[in-house]
Image (cartoon, rainbow, N blue to C red):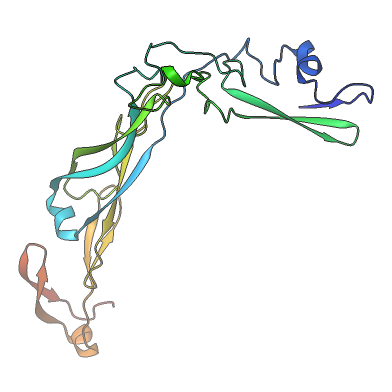
Length: 231
């Protein structure tokens, strides 16, 4: 937001500066208010072999996540009261005004005091003992997941990420599959992947053809190299 700056106007008077546009502290509360904030997604890495991918597998993974405090129901207070943050007046956003010559520039950032929730428990005696007034607590979580046979795309588990705020939905847990390197095998394709095998062979074998045995993920198989085969 840019506006001509009057030298007689106090640049620190944010309320008067933006009052004509429905702003208070640089934030339009009439249009946004204290909106729900969805929780952040979390990522975890799981090491897996090609044999496990092409056979399919079920397993569990443990990680740490932030969830809403069950003791205070996310209010951060023993009494259950939610006090409006005095810094952002409940909007969850704070306005920073910069002056550049005869112009002023407004930047909206997440309120550093309430972390965008719009609420802040300033009563030390009323703070929840479990979450220390934050409304959230870190917990160790263990979830089950399944690697579908032949699928090595990231596994997304909704609702197992960071907790949402102001009624926002919880984020997701995204499990990235870290494929253990195998010098013999390569994966070709994503939606319908095939398994490739890297074979070291001689020039006469390519020209004249040959019958060899290779160790596949399903045991030893006999493979015929046709005559005049391409590398």
